[in-house]
Length: 157
Image (cartoon, rainbow, N blue to C red):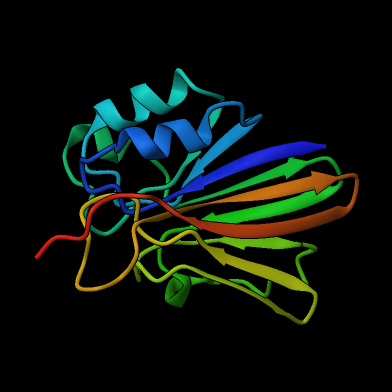
């Protein structure tokens, strides 16, 4: 079994609670709006890292980060994109089992047409009343499940 940690929308803030959750993962996927290259350096010390660029990622460092990534874990094909509205392919037709995205800051796990869509929400600065969250994929052969975990951080006023 593989445990894939999911994080998105850090916007330059890597919370220790997020790092604690990701510790022990076989791989980490960051779905964009990273905010600073130091975030990537810190996550890469925890586990191998797959990352995509978000709409707020700028500068020379971000230019080296792709807008989409594809990977395979076990028998599961995963497509990573920051903004699901920019998805330019039919995942089911392409043989993709999981699409990981970010952008909205709203955690969500939804299955449609045999494709699991996962947005881990935002692990960075809290936005409005949305939770601060991360997620994980558990992959065993061709089987995959996902869950979202709200991080125990104080609400801002």
